[in-house]
Image 1 (spheres, rainbow, N blue to C red):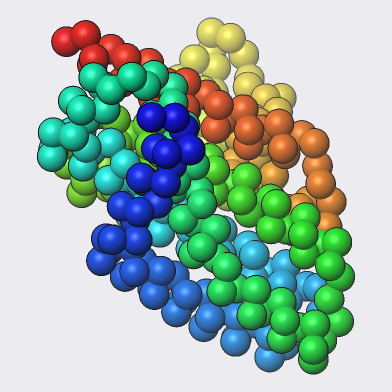
Image 2: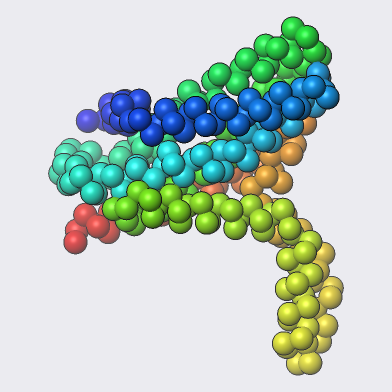
Length: 258
């Protein structure tokens, strides 16, 4: 059983799940509402740029519902033991689950091409900016999936996996979005707590702001939405994907021998 067959198995499981269609319907409903409200004011590249940002934000809430079943359901149903005893490595299992979720997400956003077609017909759209924006979105979602898969490896409860993933993604989102406020609060806390011993931490404020902005999910999406393929953003997203997939593999390996 190779990665391709395992990925097909994951995709089939998605398309046989009623929840997948509920998520797809809700996703397209909300993205459609935002597109309609947005396109009434803009009919050029800025419209689709803003729309991709919105889709990324909606994905933050939708992806945990997609990833929660990846390993939690396997453990609850007992099929994880079958996978563990099959002639397949933990790495192949995790990669196939990641790819299955990512490909399903591509099916999920495929109808948004309608937005592109409408803007091509009645607006002024830059195809280069569009392609870069979708690339950035897919990289961002790859991180969401890798984190959700990692959380799913710890529990048999799909609901718990979804909730914990939501909490992590939302906190991470807030860190990037409120970088300045967080850095000021942290500097004030350090000044009040240990400032008398180490001196003022005010000089750290700008560095902390830059750090919080850098680790934020959506900060790296901005160049892509403007039509620029930023290698720093590509490296950032891919590094997080590899990191969380590596951790997930280690978790699955540790459970095999228990």
